[in-house]
Image (tube, rainbow, N blue to C red):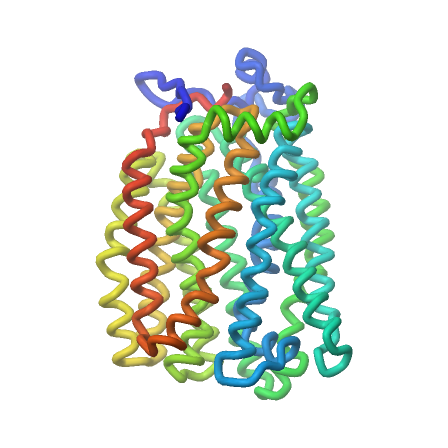
Length: 455
């Protein structure tokens, strides 16, 4: 297998390639009018890049928070776990179009630029969210209801699969020297914001509405809220700088083929590294369902775990980005993974033995915090090892493949394991297995803090 050759200069981090002079020298095609003289991206541009990511992630994961009610609305299957498992399977369907989105939209960003691709993903997520919010129940229109829901999930997955590559590539390429990890960590932090907002909705609706109201129409409110914000996200993204004008002479197929042919080792290791992030994140998102179905806690307490998880993700993702700029990508990738592998089973043993609001929030905080730290380090390490001409495509593929294969199946698999084994520690054991695989892959990945990302 061919490995990527990296350009590491002794004595500190190299230029990140956003000034006109550096871009011209490196041949990246970044526009002088879009980059400041100092090479630092503006706060407004960072906000525009991550706002769309937060919105798309919010739309995607809000489904998981209300999976119990969505299952009863669209999938009237008998049994305690029946409709829930089908609803979660439909949640997982959205992950399987992520690789397609990664290929199509990631290559589009490498071919014509980051900004057009990032606007396209917001438009796609709009249609998926509108469909979910407006589709009548199974009782109203029959089999058409679940068919529409599945199609909307596919569309959402396509958009999110193509979102991470262009947005993260732009942040890395536009970041000032020594701050690539911190800037790209806003991608993970913005997902924490999305999770927290979803948690606020969940807690508020659980307190304000009766269970019947929540099941009937209350779960649709968070989806309708996001539709109001989508035009703002599109407007903000139109003002983004462009860090890569693209390779108009290459087709999308050539760009994708180059990733698989020339950078296969980074692609495989990146998928294995991101796999544990996907699994741990989805176990965190599953805590609402776990609290209600397994621990028999109230809906408001269960939704509170999402609020805690979102807040910890926001804080610790930024901490992880800062740490990996200071101490290197590899150490910050490794140590929190090892800590999670060691602690997750005792934490779930404590939670299942003494289920309460306190234990639920503590376990959720620990899971989300450690995942955010190594998630932020992994998100910057992989694209830094890919050349600018295929960076968006490569990262999109890594993210989409790992989340579709591992993240997309996590909630369904965990629900099945709980139903079959009746062992409340099943989610923890799955996290341990995936963490061990990712620790090995992280060890095999080169250090990338001092790589020149302009080439």
